View 1 (tube, rainbow over the protein chains, first blue to last red):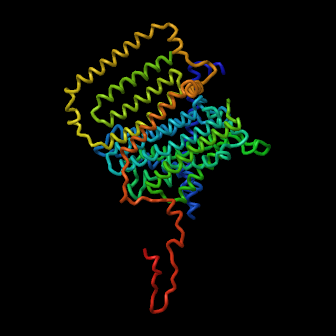
View 2 (spheres, rainbow over the protein chains, first blue to last red):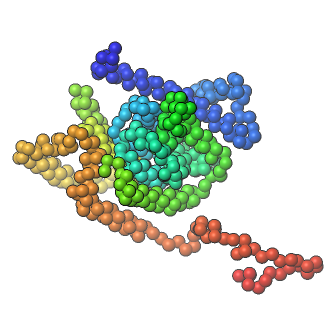
View 3 (cartoon, rainbow over the protein chains, first blue to last red):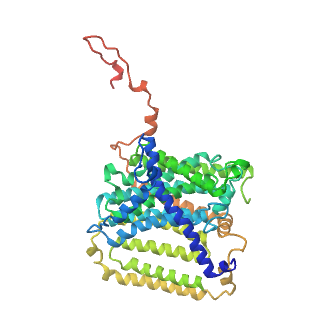
Length: 337
Length: 209
Protein backbone atom coordinates (compact mmCIF):
# COMPACT_ATOMS: atom_id res chain seq x y z
CA UNK A 1 0.00 0.00 0.00
CA UNK A 2 2.80 2.40 0.88
CA UNK A 3 4.40 1.56 -2.48
CA UNK A 4 1.34 2.88 -4.30
CA UNK A 5 1.69 6.30 -2.71
CA UNK A 6 5.20 6.64 -4.14
CA UNK A 7 3.97 6.48 -7.74
CA UNK A 8 2.86 9.55 -9.70
CA UNK A 9 -0.82 8.67 -9.48
CA UNK A 10 -0.49 7.82 -5.80
CA UNK A 11 1.10 11.19 -5.02
CA UNK A 12 -1.70 13.01 -6.84
CA UNK A 13 -4.40 11.05 -4.99
CA UNK A 14 -2.64 11.51 -1.66
CA UNK A 15 -2.29 15.27 -2.18
CA UNK A 16 -5.95 15.56 -3.16
CA UNK A 17 -6.98 13.64 -0.03
CA UNK A 18 -4.72 15.80 2.13
CA UNK A 19 -6.14 18.99 0.61
CA UNK A 20 -9.67 17.77 1.22
CA UNK A 21 -8.79 16.89 4.80
CA UNK A 22 -7.57 20.45 5.27
CA UNK A 23 -10.16 22.43 3.31
CA UNK A 24 -13.28 20.82 4.77
CA UNK A 25 -12.38 21.56 8.42
CA UNK A 26 -11.21 25.02 7.31
CA UNK A 27 -14.56 25.83 5.70
CA UNK A 28 -16.47 24.55 8.71
CA UNK A 29 -14.13 26.60 10.87
CA UNK A 30 -14.85 29.69 8.79
CA UNK A 31 -18.60 29.09 9.12
CA UNK A 32 -18.37 28.69 12.87
CA UNK A 33 -16.03 31.66 13.19
CA UNK A 34 -18.92 33.89 12.12
CA UNK A 35 -21.05 32.39 14.89
CA UNK A 36 -18.13 32.66 17.35
CA UNK A 37 -17.73 36.34 16.52
CA UNK A 38 -21.42 37.10 16.94
CA UNK A 39 -21.60 35.17 20.22
CA UNK A 40 -18.48 36.79 21.69
CA UNK A 41 -19.50 40.27 20.60
CA UNK A 42 -22.96 39.60 22.02
CA UNK A 43 -21.45 38.66 25.36
CA UNK A 44 -19.27 41.78 25.32
CA UNK A 45 -22.29 43.97 24.62
CA UNK A 46 -24.59 42.19 27.10
CA UNK A 47 -26.68 40.54 24.39
CA UNK A 48 -27.27 36.88 23.68
CA UNK A 49 -26.19 36.72 20.05
CA UNK A 50 -27.87 34.26 17.66
CA UNK A 51 -29.80 31.70 19.74
CA UNK A 52 -32.89 30.78 17.72
CA UNK A 53 -31.68 28.42 14.97
CA UNK A 54 -30.74 25.13 16.62
CA UNK A 55 -29.41 24.61 20.15
CA UNK A 56 -27.47 27.75 21.24
CA UNK A 57 -27.84 29.02 17.65
CA UNK A 58 -25.47 26.32 16.40
CA UNK A 59 -27.20 25.97 13.00
CA UNK A 60 -27.04 29.72 12.35
CA UNK A 61 -24.04 29.55 9.92
CA UNK A 62 -25.90 27.00 7.76
CA UNK A 63 -29.06 29.10 7.79
CA UNK A 64 -27.00 32.09 6.64
CA UNK A 65 -25.31 30.06 3.91
CA UNK A 66 -28.65 28.78 2.60
CA UNK A 67 -30.06 32.30 2.61
CA UNK A 68 -27.09 33.50 0.56
CA UNK A 69 -27.45 30.59 -1.89
CA UNK A 70 -31.11 31.32 -2.64
CA UNK A 71 -30.63 35.04 -3.22
CA UNK A 72 -30.39 36.50 -6.69
CA UNK A 73 -26.96 37.34 -8.09
CA UNK A 74 -27.12 40.87 -9.46
CA UNK A 75 -24.49 42.09 -11.91
CA UNK A 76 -24.70 45.87 -12.33
CA UNK A 77 -24.99 47.29 -15.85
CA UNK A 78 -21.80 49.07 -16.84
CA UNK A 79 -19.71 46.69 -14.77
CA UNK A 80 -16.92 44.60 -16.23
CA UNK A 81 -18.81 41.28 -16.02
CA UNK A 82 -15.87 38.87 -16.16
CA UNK A 83 -13.68 40.73 -13.67
CA UNK A 84 -16.73 41.34 -11.47
CA UNK A 85 -17.27 37.59 -11.14
CA UNK A 86 -13.58 36.70 -10.85
CA UNK A 87 -12.76 39.12 -8.01
CA UNK A 88 -14.53 37.25 -5.15
CA UNK A 89 -13.08 33.97 -6.41
CA UNK A 90 -9.57 35.43 -6.25
CA UNK A 91 -10.12 36.65 -2.69
CA UNK A 92 -11.51 33.36 -1.44
CA UNK A 93 -9.15 31.16 -3.46
CA UNK A 94 -6.03 32.92 -2.16
CA UNK A 95 -7.27 32.70 1.42
CA UNK A 96 -7.58 28.91 1.06
CA UNK A 97 -4.45 28.28 -1.05
CA UNK A 98 -2.17 29.81 1.57
CA UNK A 99 -3.00 26.97 3.96
CA UNK A 100 -0.92 24.51 1.90
CA UNK A 101 2.25 25.30 3.83
CA UNK A 102 0.98 25.85 7.40
CA UNK A 103 2.29 23.05 9.67
CA UNK A 104 -0.38 21.85 12.09
CA UNK A 105 1.98 19.40 13.78
CA UNK A 106 5.60 18.31 13.26
CA UNK A 107 5.84 17.92 9.44
CA UNK A 108 2.04 17.95 9.11
CA UNK A 109 1.76 20.29 6.14
CA UNK A 110 0.55 19.53 2.63
CA UNK A 111 3.72 21.08 1.22
CA UNK A 112 6.69 21.27 3.59
CA UNK A 113 8.68 23.58 1.29
CA UNK A 114 12.00 25.34 1.86
CA UNK A 115 10.64 28.84 1.40
CA UNK A 116 7.31 28.40 3.21
CA UNK A 117 7.29 31.82 4.82
CA UNK A 118 7.99 33.53 1.49
CA UNK A 119 5.09 31.58 -0.03
CA UNK A 120 2.77 32.79 2.73
CA UNK A 121 3.95 36.37 2.34
CA UNK A 122 3.56 36.24 -1.44
CA UNK A 123 0.03 34.82 -1.23
CA UNK A 124 -1.06 37.35 1.37
CA UNK A 125 0.34 40.18 -0.75
CA UNK A 126 -1.73 38.95 -3.71
CA UNK A 127 -4.90 39.24 -1.61
CA UNK A 128 -5.19 42.92 -2.47
CA UNK A 129 -6.04 42.09 -6.09
CA UNK A 130 -9.42 40.59 -5.25
CA UNK A 131 -10.37 43.83 -3.55
CA UNK A 132 -8.98 46.26 -6.10
CA UNK A 133 -10.47 44.33 -9.06
CA UNK A 134 -13.84 44.17 -7.31
CA UNK A 135 -13.75 47.92 -6.70
CA UNK A 136 -12.88 48.75 -10.27
CA UNK A 137 -15.13 46.22 -11.98
CA UNK A 138 -18.22 47.37 -10.04
CA UNK A 139 -18.06 50.72 -11.84
CA UNK A 140 -19.30 52.53 -8.75
CA UNK A 141 -17.79 55.46 -6.85
CA UNK A 142 -18.11 53.96 -3.40
CA UNK A 143 -16.72 50.60 -4.42
CA UNK A 144 -13.78 52.27 -6.15
CA UNK A 145 -12.99 54.52 -3.17
CA UNK A 146 -13.12 51.52 -0.85
CA UNK A 147 -10.82 49.55 -3.13
CA UNK A 148 -8.28 52.39 -3.32
CA UNK A 149 -8.30 52.78 0.44
CA UNK A 150 -7.72 49.13 1.11
CA UNK A 151 -5.06 48.78 -1.59
CA UNK A 152 -3.02 51.63 -0.10
CA UNK A 153 -3.55 50.25 3.38
CA UNK A 154 -2.52 46.69 2.59
CA UNK A 155 0.60 47.76 0.69
CA UNK A 156 1.65 50.03 3.59
CA UNK A 157 1.29 47.45 6.32
CA UNK A 158 2.96 44.74 4.29
CA UNK A 159 6.25 46.64 4.53
CA UNK A 160 6.48 46.47 8.31
CA UNK A 161 5.16 42.89 8.27
CA UNK A 162 8.02 42.00 5.93
CA UNK A 163 10.61 43.45 8.32
CA UNK A 164 9.07 41.53 11.24
CA UNK A 165 9.26 38.30 9.26
CA UNK A 166 12.89 39.03 8.39
CA UNK A 167 13.67 39.56 12.08
CA UNK A 168 12.14 36.18 12.92
CA UNK A 169 14.13 34.61 10.09
CA UNK A 170 17.37 36.09 11.47
CA UNK A 171 16.60 34.27 14.74
CA UNK A 172 15.75 30.98 12.98
CA UNK A 173 18.18 30.77 10.08
CA UNK A 174 15.66 29.03 7.80
CA UNK A 175 12.65 29.95 5.68
CA UNK A 176 10.92 26.64 6.39
CA UNK A 177 7.86 27.01 8.64
CA UNK A 178 8.59 23.70 10.36
CA UNK A 179 12.08 24.92 11.27
CA UNK A 180 10.63 28.21 12.48
CA UNK A 181 8.38 26.39 14.94
CA UNK A 182 11.13 23.98 16.02
CA UNK A 183 13.43 26.96 16.73
CA UNK A 184 10.92 27.99 19.44
CA UNK A 185 11.38 24.77 21.49
CA UNK A 186 13.07 26.64 24.34
CA UNK A 187 11.32 29.97 24.23
CA UNK A 188 8.50 31.25 22.04
CA UNK A 189 9.50 34.24 19.93
CA UNK A 190 6.63 36.20 21.46
CA UNK A 191 8.80 36.69 24.56
CA UNK A 192 12.14 37.98 23.20
CA UNK A 193 10.45 39.76 20.29
CA UNK A 194 7.42 40.99 22.24
CA UNK A 195 7.07 44.43 20.55
CA UNK A 196 7.28 42.81 17.12
CA UNK A 197 4.64 40.26 18.13
CA UNK A 198 2.24 43.10 18.97
CA UNK A 199 3.08 45.04 15.80
CA UNK A 200 2.66 41.90 13.69
CA UNK A 201 -0.78 41.30 15.14
CA UNK A 202 -1.86 44.91 14.57
CA UNK A 203 -0.53 44.78 10.99
CA UNK A 204 -2.50 41.56 10.61
CA UNK A 205 -5.64 43.45 11.58
CA UNK A 206 -4.83 46.02 8.90
CA UNK A 207 -3.96 43.33 6.36
CA UNK A 208 -7.32 41.60 6.79
CA UNK A 209 -9.22 44.93 6.76
CA UNK A 210 -10.65 44.25 10.20
CA UNK A 211 -11.72 46.80 12.79
CA UNK A 212 -10.23 49.24 13.75
CA UNK A 213 -8.69 49.33 10.26
CA UNK A 214 -11.84 48.50 8.28
CA UNK A 215 -11.88 51.78 6.36
CA UNK A 216 -12.18 49.82 3.16
CA UNK A 217 -15.76 49.03 4.11
CA UNK A 218 -16.41 52.02 6.37
CA UNK A 219 -20.21 51.82 6.24
CA UNK A 220 -20.75 55.34 7.60
CA UNK A 221 -18.83 56.97 4.73
CA UNK A 222 -18.76 54.73 1.68
CA UNK A 223 -21.71 52.39 2.33
CA UNK A 224 -19.90 49.04 2.35
CA UNK A 225 -16.74 49.83 0.41
CA UNK A 226 -15.51 47.56 -2.31
CA UNK A 227 -18.36 45.05 -2.14
CA UNK A 228 -21.35 47.44 -2.28
CA UNK A 229 -22.49 46.03 -5.61
CA UNK A 230 -22.12 42.37 -4.68
CA UNK A 231 -25.01 40.14 -3.72
CA UNK A 232 -25.80 36.51 -3.01
CA UNK A 233 -22.96 33.99 -3.44
CA UNK A 234 -20.41 36.48 -4.77
CA UNK A 235 -20.92 38.53 -1.61
CA UNK A 236 -20.69 35.37 0.48
CA UNK A 237 -17.33 34.55 -1.09
CA UNK A 238 -15.93 37.93 0.01
CA UNK A 239 -17.38 37.39 3.45
CA UNK A 240 -15.91 33.90 3.76
CA UNK A 241 -12.61 35.12 2.32
CA UNK A 242 -12.35 37.77 5.03
CA UNK A 243 -12.91 35.21 7.77
CA UNK A 244 -10.55 32.68 6.16
CA UNK A 245 -7.93 35.44 6.06
CA UNK A 246 -8.49 36.10 9.76
CA UNK A 247 -7.82 32.44 10.52
CA UNK A 248 -4.77 32.54 8.24
CA UNK A 249 -3.26 35.59 9.96
CA UNK A 250 -3.93 33.94 13.33
CA UNK A 251 -2.17 30.80 12.12
CA UNK A 252 0.77 32.91 10.89
CA UNK A 253 1.00 34.67 14.27
CA UNK A 254 0.86 31.28 15.98
CA UNK A 255 3.58 29.83 13.79
CA UNK A 256 5.92 32.80 13.93
CA UNK A 257 5.53 33.89 17.55
CA UNK A 258 3.48 31.46 19.65
CA UNK A 259 5.39 28.27 18.94
CA UNK A 260 2.93 26.58 16.55
CA UNK A 261 1.98 23.13 17.82
CA UNK A 262 4.45 23.20 20.74
CA UNK A 263 2.91 22.89 24.23
CA UNK A 264 3.19 25.66 26.80
CA UNK A 265 5.74 23.73 28.91
CA UNK A 266 7.52 20.52 28.00
CA UNK A 267 6.39 18.60 31.09
CA UNK A 268 3.72 16.06 31.94
CA UNK A 269 0.25 17.64 32.00
CA UNK A 270 0.96 19.83 28.98
CA UNK A 271 2.46 17.16 26.73
CA UNK A 272 -0.62 14.91 27.10
CA UNK A 273 -2.51 17.12 24.65
CA UNK A 274 -1.38 16.36 21.06
CA UNK A 275 0.18 19.10 18.91
CA UNK A 276 -2.77 19.96 16.64
CA UNK A 277 -4.89 20.83 19.68
CA UNK A 278 -2.24 23.24 20.91
CA UNK A 279 -2.12 24.79 17.45
CA UNK A 280 -5.92 25.12 17.36
CA UNK A 281 -6.01 26.56 20.86
CA UNK A 282 -3.48 29.25 19.97
CA UNK A 283 -5.28 30.11 16.74
CA UNK A 284 -8.55 30.38 18.69
CA UNK A 285 -6.87 32.70 21.17
CA UNK A 286 -5.71 34.99 18.33
CA UNK A 287 -9.20 34.92 16.80
CA UNK A 288 -10.69 35.87 20.15
CA UNK A 289 -8.40 38.90 20.28
CA UNK A 290 -9.51 39.79 16.72
CA UNK A 291 -13.14 39.85 17.88
CA UNK A 292 -12.28 41.55 21.16
CA UNK A 293 -10.54 44.38 19.31
CA UNK A 294 -13.51 44.76 16.96
CA UNK A 295 -15.95 45.04 19.86
CA UNK A 296 -13.77 47.53 21.74
CA UNK A 297 -11.99 50.02 19.51
CA UNK A 298 -13.39 52.77 17.26
CA UNK A 299 -12.29 53.02 13.63
CA UNK A 300 -9.15 55.01 12.81
CA UNK A 301 -9.21 58.00 10.50
CA UNK A 302 -7.43 57.45 7.19
CA UNK A 303 -4.49 59.80 7.82
CA UNK A 304 -4.01 58.25 11.28
CA UNK A 305 -3.92 54.82 9.70
CA UNK A 306 -1.23 55.83 7.21
CA UNK A 307 0.78 57.71 9.85
CA UNK A 308 0.71 54.65 12.13
CA UNK A 309 1.96 52.37 9.37
CA UNK A 310 4.72 54.52 7.91
CA UNK A 311 5.83 56.75 10.79
CA UNK A 312 5.50 54.39 13.76
CA UNK A 313 5.60 50.73 12.73
CA UNK A 314 8.14 50.99 9.92
CA UNK A 315 10.88 52.76 11.97
CA UNK A 316 10.33 50.51 15.00
CA UNK A 317 10.55 47.29 13.00
CA UNK A 318 13.57 48.52 11.04
CA UNK A 319 15.49 49.49 14.18
CA UNK A 320 14.46 46.25 15.91
CA UNK A 321 15.73 44.20 12.98
CA UNK A 322 19.15 45.87 13.08
CA UNK A 323 19.27 45.60 16.88
CA UNK A 324 18.34 41.90 16.91
CA UNK A 325 20.89 41.10 14.21
CA UNK A 326 23.55 43.07 16.12
CA UNK A 327 22.82 41.37 19.45
CA UNK A 328 22.80 37.89 17.90
CA UNK A 329 26.10 38.60 16.14
CA UNK A 330 27.69 40.03 19.30
CA UNK A 331 26.65 37.07 21.46
CA UNK A 332 27.49 34.56 18.74
CA UNK A 333 23.92 33.20 18.75
CA UNK A 334 23.39 33.50 15.02
CA UNK A 335 22.08 30.18 13.66
CA UNK A 336 24.28 28.36 11.10
CA UNK A 337 27.11 30.82 11.82
CA UNK B 1 7.85 14.64 -18.43
CA UNK B 2 5.25 16.37 -16.28
CA UNK B 3 7.72 19.17 -15.55
CA UNK B 4 8.29 19.70 -19.27
CA UNK B 5 4.57 19.80 -19.97
CA UNK B 6 4.07 22.27 -17.14
CA UNK B 7 6.90 24.41 -18.49
CA UNK B 8 5.28 24.48 -21.96
CA UNK B 9 1.87 25.23 -20.48
CA UNK B 10 3.02 28.15 -18.34
CA UNK B 11 5.26 29.60 -21.08
CA UNK B 12 2.27 29.51 -23.40
CA UNK B 13 0.18 31.47 -20.89
CA UNK B 14 3.11 33.84 -20.32
CA UNK B 15 3.51 34.59 -24.03
CA UNK B 16 -0.24 34.92 -24.59
CA UNK B 17 -0.66 37.33 -21.73
CA UNK B 18 2.39 39.30 -22.87
CA UNK B 19 0.75 39.70 -26.29
CA UNK B 20 -2.52 40.67 -24.60
CA UNK B 21 -0.73 43.40 -22.62
CA UNK B 22 0.08 45.15 -25.88
CA UNK B 23 -3.16 44.45 -27.74
CA UNK B 24 -5.93 44.92 -25.17
CA UNK B 25 -7.98 48.06 -25.67
CA UNK B 26 -8.65 48.70 -22.02
CA UNK B 27 -5.51 49.83 -20.13
CA UNK B 28 -6.71 48.20 -16.89
CA UNK B 29 -7.03 44.86 -18.67
CA UNK B 30 -3.53 45.40 -20.05
CA UNK B 31 -2.12 45.85 -16.54
CA UNK B 32 -4.01 42.76 -15.31
CA UNK B 33 -2.50 40.74 -18.15
CA UNK B 34 0.91 42.13 -17.18
CA UNK B 35 0.32 40.81 -13.67
CA UNK B 36 -0.65 37.42 -15.10
CA UNK B 37 2.60 37.47 -17.07
CA UNK B 38 4.57 38.23 -13.87
CA UNK B 39 2.90 35.35 -12.05
CA UNK B 40 3.68 32.94 -14.87
CA UNK B 41 7.29 34.12 -14.96
CA UNK B 42 7.45 33.35 -11.23
CA UNK B 43 6.06 29.87 -11.90
CA UNK B 44 8.73 29.32 -14.56
CA UNK B 45 11.42 30.30 -12.03
CA UNK B 46 9.87 27.78 -9.66
CA UNK B 47 9.97 25.04 -12.28
CA UNK B 48 13.63 25.87 -12.94
CA UNK B 49 14.33 25.29 -9.24
CA UNK B 50 14.93 28.95 -8.34
CA UNK B 51 12.31 29.11 -5.60
CA UNK B 52 13.71 32.19 -3.86
CA UNK B 53 13.71 34.27 -7.05
CA UNK B 54 10.20 33.03 -7.87
CA UNK B 55 8.69 34.20 -4.60
CA UNK B 56 10.63 37.44 -4.51
CA UNK B 57 9.30 38.18 -8.00
CA UNK B 58 5.77 37.47 -6.78
CA UNK B 59 6.17 39.58 -3.63
CA UNK B 60 7.96 42.58 -5.13
CA UNK B 61 6.52 42.85 -8.61
CA UNK B 62 3.06 41.36 -8.25
CA UNK B 63 2.45 42.28 -4.62
CA UNK B 64 3.77 45.83 -4.59
CA UNK B 65 4.91 47.37 -7.89
CA UNK B 66 1.99 46.14 -10.00
CA UNK B 67 -0.53 47.20 -7.33
CA UNK B 68 0.70 50.78 -7.53
CA UNK B 69 0.77 50.56 -11.31
CA UNK B 70 -2.82 49.32 -11.38
CA UNK B 71 -3.72 52.05 -8.94
CA UNK B 72 -2.42 54.76 -11.26
CA UNK B 73 -3.90 53.28 -14.43
CA UNK B 74 -7.34 52.92 -12.81
CA UNK B 75 -7.32 56.58 -11.83
CA UNK B 76 -6.33 57.81 -15.29
CA UNK B 77 -9.15 59.17 -17.37
CA UNK B 78 -8.00 58.03 -20.77
CA UNK B 79 -9.71 58.80 -24.04
CA UNK B 80 -9.16 55.51 -25.84
CA UNK B 81 -9.63 56.95 -29.33
CA UNK B 82 -6.97 59.62 -28.83
CA UNK B 83 -4.75 56.99 -27.31
CA UNK B 84 -4.48 54.99 -30.53
CA UNK B 85 -4.08 58.02 -32.75
CA UNK B 86 -0.30 58.07 -33.16
CA UNK B 87 -0.03 54.34 -33.87
CA UNK B 88 1.00 54.66 -37.52
CA UNK B 89 3.56 57.35 -36.78
CA UNK B 90 5.26 55.48 -33.93
CA UNK B 91 5.01 51.96 -35.35
CA UNK B 92 8.31 52.15 -37.33
CA UNK B 93 10.24 53.29 -34.21
CA UNK B 94 8.71 50.45 -32.20
CA UNK B 95 9.62 47.98 -34.91
CA UNK B 96 13.19 49.32 -34.95
CA UNK B 97 13.54 48.84 -31.16
CA UNK B 98 12.12 45.32 -31.49
CA UNK B 99 14.60 44.55 -34.26
CA UNK B 100 17.57 45.79 -32.20
CA UNK B 101 16.42 43.67 -29.24
CA UNK B 102 16.00 40.65 -31.49
CA UNK B 103 19.50 41.05 -32.94
CA UNK B 104 20.95 41.39 -29.44
CA UNK B 105 19.15 38.24 -28.34
CA UNK B 106 20.41 36.40 -31.41
CA UNK B 107 23.97 37.47 -30.65
CA UNK B 108 23.64 36.27 -27.07
CA UNK B 109 22.21 32.91 -28.12
CA UNK B 110 24.90 32.51 -30.76
CA UNK B 111 27.60 33.30 -28.19
CA UNK B 112 26.21 30.61 -25.89
CA UNK B 113 28.16 27.77 -27.51
CA UNK B 114 31.55 29.50 -27.61
CA UNK B 115 32.66 28.30 -24.16
CA UNK B 116 31.68 24.64 -23.77
CA UNK B 117 32.08 24.61 -19.98
CA UNK B 118 29.90 27.67 -19.51
CA UNK B 119 26.48 26.02 -20.00
CA UNK B 120 27.25 23.44 -17.32
CA UNK B 121 28.27 26.17 -14.88
CA UNK B 122 25.14 28.15 -15.76
CA UNK B 123 22.80 25.19 -15.44
CA UNK B 124 24.02 23.90 -12.07
CA UNK B 125 25.25 26.87 -10.10
CA UNK B 126 24.35 25.67 -6.59
CA UNK B 127 25.87 22.70 -4.76
CA UNK B 128 23.45 19.94 -3.80
CA UNK B 129 23.40 20.40 -0.04
CA UNK B 130 22.86 24.16 -0.07
CA UNK B 131 19.40 25.67 -0.54
CA UNK B 132 18.77 28.28 -3.16
CA UNK B 133 18.30 31.09 -0.65
CA UNK B 134 21.51 30.33 1.25
CA UNK B 135 23.53 30.12 -1.97
CA UNK B 136 22.17 33.42 -3.24
CA UNK B 137 22.64 35.14 0.12
CA UNK B 138 26.20 33.98 0.62
CA UNK B 139 27.11 35.19 -2.88
CA UNK B 140 25.42 38.57 -2.64
CA UNK B 141 26.66 39.42 0.85
CA UNK B 142 30.27 38.35 0.29
CA UNK B 143 31.58 38.49 -3.28
CA UNK B 144 29.11 41.04 -4.59
CA UNK B 145 28.65 43.19 -1.51
CA UNK B 146 29.92 46.45 -3.11
CA UNK B 147 27.58 45.99 -6.09
CA UNK B 148 24.69 45.20 -3.77
CA UNK B 149 25.28 48.31 -1.70
CA UNK B 150 25.72 50.39 -4.84
CA UNK B 151 22.30 49.30 -6.13
CA UNK B 152 20.87 50.07 -2.70
CA UNK B 153 22.28 53.61 -2.86
CA UNK B 154 20.89 54.10 -6.38
CA UNK B 155 17.44 53.09 -5.15
CA UNK B 156 17.77 55.42 -2.15
CA UNK B 157 18.69 58.33 -4.41
CA UNK B 158 15.72 57.56 -6.65
CA UNK B 159 13.44 57.49 -3.61
CA UNK B 160 14.73 60.80 -2.28
CA UNK B 161 14.36 62.28 -5.75
CA UNK B 162 10.73 61.17 -5.97
CA UNK B 163 9.99 62.64 -2.54
CA UNK B 164 11.69 65.95 -3.40
CA UNK B 165 9.81 66.21 -6.71
CA UNK B 166 6.38 65.56 -5.22
CA UNK B 167 6.74 67.20 -1.82
CA UNK B 168 4.59 70.25 -1.21
CA UNK B 169 4.71 72.07 2.07
CA UNK B 170 1.04 72.65 2.73
CA UNK B 171 1.09 75.29 5.45
CA UNK B 172 -2.65 75.87 5.39
CA UNK B 173 -3.59 72.25 5.81
CA UNK B 174 -4.66 71.22 9.29
CA UNK B 175 -2.69 68.09 10.06
CA UNK B 176 -2.75 66.27 13.34
CA UNK B 177 0.33 66.47 15.56
CA UNK B 178 0.05 63.46 17.83
CA UNK B 179 2.98 64.29 20.12
CA UNK B 180 1.73 67.84 20.62
CA UNK B 181 -1.69 66.47 21.52
CA UNK B 182 -0.25 63.99 23.98
CA UNK B 183 2.02 66.61 25.55
CA UNK B 184 -0.95 68.89 26.34
CA UNK B 185 -1.75 69.16 30.06
CA UNK B 186 -4.83 70.68 31.74
CA UNK B 187 -2.79 73.57 33.15
CA UNK B 188 -1.79 74.64 29.60
CA UNK B 189 -5.34 75.36 28.57
CA UNK B 190 -7.54 75.44 31.64
CA UNK B 191 -7.85 78.26 34.18
CA UNK B 192 -10.10 77.96 37.19
CA UNK B 193 -11.78 81.29 37.97
CA UNK B 194 -14.29 81.72 40.77
CA UNK B 195 -17.24 83.82 39.62
CA UNK B 196 -18.82 86.34 42.03
CA UNK B 197 -22.57 86.76 42.20
CA UNK B 198 -23.96 89.41 39.80
CA UNK B 199 -20.45 90.28 38.56
CA UNK B 200 -19.43 87.26 36.52
CA UNK B 201 -15.82 86.39 35.90
CA UNK B 202 -13.06 87.70 33.68
CA UNK B 203 -10.10 85.70 32.53
CA UNK B 204 -6.62 86.69 33.72
CA UNK B 205 -4.87 88.85 31.08
CA UNK B 206 -2.15 86.56 29.78
CA UNK B 207 -4.45 83.66 29.09
CA UNK B 208 -6.37 85.49 26.35
CA UNK B 209 -3.89 85.00 23.58
